[in-house]
Amino acid sequence: METLPTIAVLGGTGKEGPGLALRWAYAGYPIIIGSRQQEKAEATAAELNTSLNIHSIIGMENSRAARAADICVLTVVYTAHQAALESIRDDLQGKILVDATARVDFRDPKPPAPPSAARLAQELLGPAVRVVAAFQNVPAHSLRKNLGQALDSDVLVCSEDASAAQEVIRLAQAGGMRAYYAGGLDNAVVVEGLTALVIGLNKAYGTKTASIGVTGINR
Ligand SMILES: NC(=O)c1ccc[n+]([C@@H]2O[C@H](COP(=O)([O-])OP(=O)(O)OC[C@H]3O[C@@H](n4cnc5c(N)ncnc54)[C@H](OP(=O)(O)O)[C@@H]3O)[C@@H](O)[C@H]2O)c1
Image (cartoon, rainbow, N blue to C red; front, top):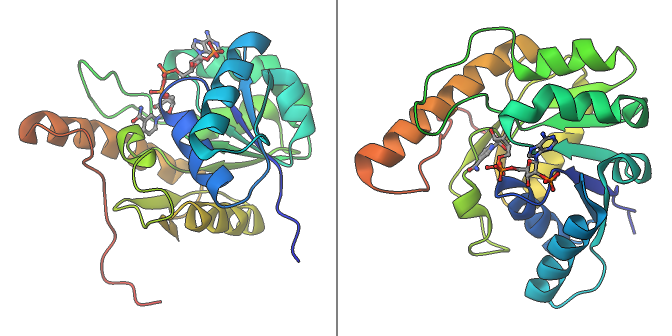
């Protein structure tokens, strides 16, 4: 049987991180929840374990979580993007870092200016970290519902590292999402901008689950 990579969800104590963690744990991936505080990470891990009736999700401080994982997924609040990356730069060397950051203010949603968050991450972390941008348009609100079923949300995956992008596409699929390779890290600023659009759609239509879908590709 294939051994699944261990996933650390860094800043996995908020809204988006626990939802992704829940879906991957449900699919059998070993999961570590990361936080600036060990106790907070443990509390979220315990809550997720309870909801899945398992014991395998563990909580650790971000730095230890990053070191213990094969793939790290960054889900910190966007204003903490740089500070969080600086605090784990050494721990991420040689690993895949999935950046889910959309630099959009929920109260005043506007598309961010280039460079993309993921490009900034790549520059800050250096070439030995395999940065992949993904999940910026997947609503936290949808992730916790209907585990094991397909999510009505497509994932645009941007990276210069083709094999890292493929790993993240597999991860998205394991979580019930369709995922598409959408070019290099600079394209990810468009994906972040779509988050501003999605927040606007949520407000206009009184929902929390608006997302994006790709059409015209037969696979
Ligand atoms: N919410 C969504 O629907 C959604 C959808 C797609 C993508 N995203 C993206 O996912 C990311 C997380 O969104 P969210 O809604 O989950 O955010 P959130 O709940 O507001 O915060 C997530 C985590 O960020 C950490 N954090 C806060 N300040 C920090 C700091 N100064 N340094 C390091 N970590 C800090 C906290 O973890 P600790 O206190 O445990 O360290 C917190 O639990 C954002 O970049 C967002 O753009 C969100």
